[in-house]
Image (cartoon, rainbow over all chains, first blue to last red; front, top):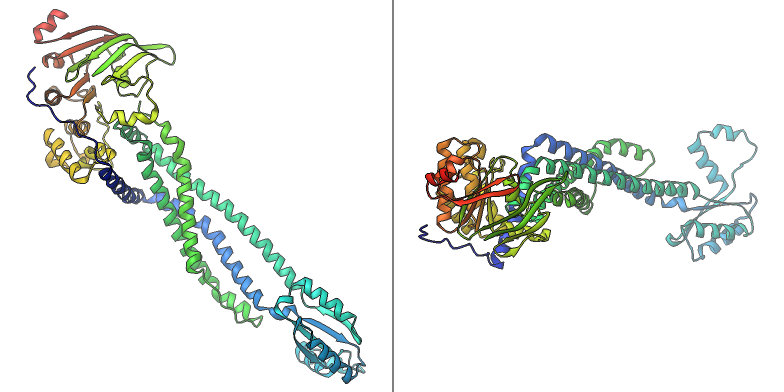
Amino acid sequence: MAKTRHQQPLSRPKLKTRTRAYMRDHARVLLFSLGKLYRTPFATVMTILMIAVALALPACLYVLLSNLQTVTQKWNDAGQISIFLNENTSEQQITQLHKKLRDHKEIERVDFISAKEALKEFKQRSGFGELLEGLPNNPLPPTLIITPIEAAKDSEHLQKLKTQFISLPQVEQVHVDMQWLQRLRSITAIIRHAIFAIGIMLGLSVLLVVGNSIRLDIENRREEIEVTKLIGATDRFIRRPFLYGGMWYGLLGGVLALILVIIVLLVIRQPAQELVSLYNSDFKLILPSLIQSLLLVLTSIFLGLVGSWLAVNRRISKIQPS
Amino acid sequence: MIELQNVTKRYPGNREALSHLNLTIEQGEMAFLTGPSGAGKSTLLKLIAAIEKPTRGQVFINRKNITRIPKRKVPALRRHMGVVFQDHHLLHDRNVFDNVSLPLQIAGFAQVDINRRVRAALDKVDLLDKEKMMPITLSGGEQQRVGIARAVVHKPAILLADEPTGNLDPELSAEIMRLFSDFNQVGVTVLIASHDLDLITRMQKRIIRLRAGECIDSQSVNSPQDFEIIN
């Protein structure tokens, strides 16, 4: 047999060339996997919608909760203590008491409401004025309204102050306007935990949704995987487009989730403001901040990557050409 | 180049596809595998491409024992081979150029080299003008030639083909075989499984005949007349 010329075998590319090719392959696969999603629009849109809804729900709840918290934080006057004095306390005694309380290091300010003022205010506010006029004398006591300093506004401090006040002369009764706020705060704490739990469950469902989509994709491409393995592709090379696919699902789902959250907030903005204005509060609905938005999208990308990783990991090495 | 020593392959269910097979194919040789279906032709090719492992015996590629090769070393081994299938196994979501360039992309070649090599391979199989087309728009013979271009684009030392002309008419088949012969001319070791006896005798190369997993005959055929005598 006449062999005229022998072909030179291709030598393995240099490390630098291979590194550059590796980067190029990442860029290529990044676009390729996006194109793949574009070519199956229905399945892609379904998957992305599922991710978006699953993430938008806890995100909406979270934003609403943080709005509620900013509202309740503004209600500082709720930490006030009312001291009801004996009806026949003299003015001198009141002035003494007033001065003593004002010098207390845990007290910010002290307001005095005389029995007359209290009656006047009550008449204005309650609408039962005529009823009170029928009474022989004023049933309301003179009152000192104590606003403690910021650091003393937790329930522990307020309870301490209450016991101090009750032992003062001429004090009939001490009332802390705290309980309902505490209840509200513990309810919001429960809600926060609930949102956290819901968020974890829905995050898991995102993993499953992405994992399932990628798994189907792998099954559809079983033949392709076998062929590329026969050509000498490593598992990592084959895995790459699927991981990028999961990343795209996460990115697109996260962005859509963010859009959903903003739409929901804009829709409830008006009624929320009306509701809050009934409580004399200058409340403005806060939209998620840039960092929170970024965090939502990054979480979504992370979930997409992990979901596809779980789907890809063992399955690819199991597929062998036959 | 390829050496099998006392190789037995038994599939689950105790079917013995190959039994006690000894075979050596020299570097630069071109040989045909033939025999009735179930004779073990495909199994033999699978053992060489490390798709299957022998139940007993040893397989050597380029003096390297690949019998118990770890999984992670299989891709590197396969990059020294080109494989052609009966049904092309082209990827239908990308064009001819991208199909052919796949082995080079996997091996991490620079884009300029990829372009040059792919065009050279496509030129060799006479499909240079179809590089932008999708495989599905090509005829069966053209698809097979794309498959061959992909198998040789990285200049493998060994070219394996399993019934590469199985679906083609005689004229196209002869053309494909001529291509394989051309590659052999430049030093590639070529092993082709085919049951098309007429065609392969005309090629005047070595013919290895298998029956029920055993090698019953291995002869170099220099003319069609020789083959008549063997028969």
